[in-house]
Image 1 (cartoon, rainbow, N blue to C red):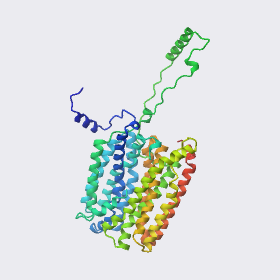
Image 2 (spheres, rainbow, N blue to C red):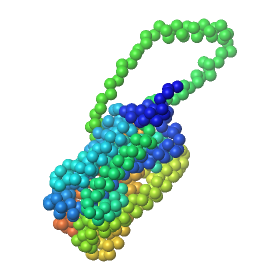
Image 3 (cartoon, rainbow, N blue to C red):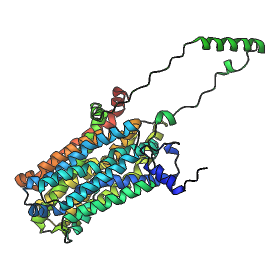
Image 4 (cartoon, rainbow, N blue to C red):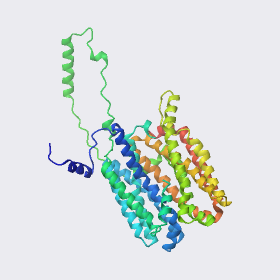
Length: 479
């Protein structure tokens, strides 16, 4: 045995670029999987968390940096656009080098550096650039995290809105809106430390761990024929060995793997991926558009300051929380129920469970319309707060189920499929964010929300089509 201290061996293993995965990640202990899920949750929440944590301070940023309103809006719009593009590169790096851990660690360093830079910035355009860099660091958890879930869990067991609340209180400090970026910096260092100490490498090579055991030969060839003697059998076996030895051994040429970060974009040519991406993209884009217009609307119509605006996002946080809890409880149960009703035959579309229909047809459009018209008619502030919570309750379940659907449909390329869908999602969010405030200024909050509700109706139709024709669309695409 080596005399090297244990702590040195552990430290060296933690510093490896690609630690070996010696056993199937799906057979890890429950406690280890729980730690992995905590790590992925921490990484995954940074994008949604940092995208909105400074929203209550948008008016203060505009005033302090003497910024035009469009530039302040771009700090949010380009953040989500970068969040749609960069996961594709993270996913490509993950699949090419067959690693997860080192990418998550490196992304947290990028996120920390951009956050501390944003805290000291004094120019709005420099802030726009740093927000894009911050998005690059925070977006790794989305696509690589989906790959980790596919590594560790089979289909049957898979099942960010509190940022502005914290941001509203941080802005009350002497550092004002800059305090939100200090918080992001500290949060990034915490996540990096947690990942470094506890997160193992999980990249699962399916060809290695999904090998089937050799099957027994047919009994007619493995047992003696009643008309053959043992000597005859030995002669036959000897001749077979000699025949095999005469065959030329063909050594397959080694395949050269190439990294193509745009390969994930090409996945959007598959109709089932595009439909899933559009459904979740519209749901998320409508939510982010509402989230963007809240600070100005609440300040104008209700006289809110930064901490009150931050607290107003509590409704969305509660909606997301309950959407996640209820969706998580129902998803796997309804999936197994669908398979049971079908006689045990499994199809991926079972992941699009029955709880999505009220979310899509009732909660999301009703929440959007209630939000817009309650502000338009100056109803109690509790009406838009509750309305936004209703919208996020439905949106969370749509997002979760469609993301799980893609991972289930393409388990060996879960990271790339998730990244491709994320691109569509963030492009739509960017476009709606840029359009939301001008639309409110032009036609009012009510009719702006009518437009968003109409988009959500389109998403409902796409989801119905995916549920109805998804299996045929996958077969047409070769999956």
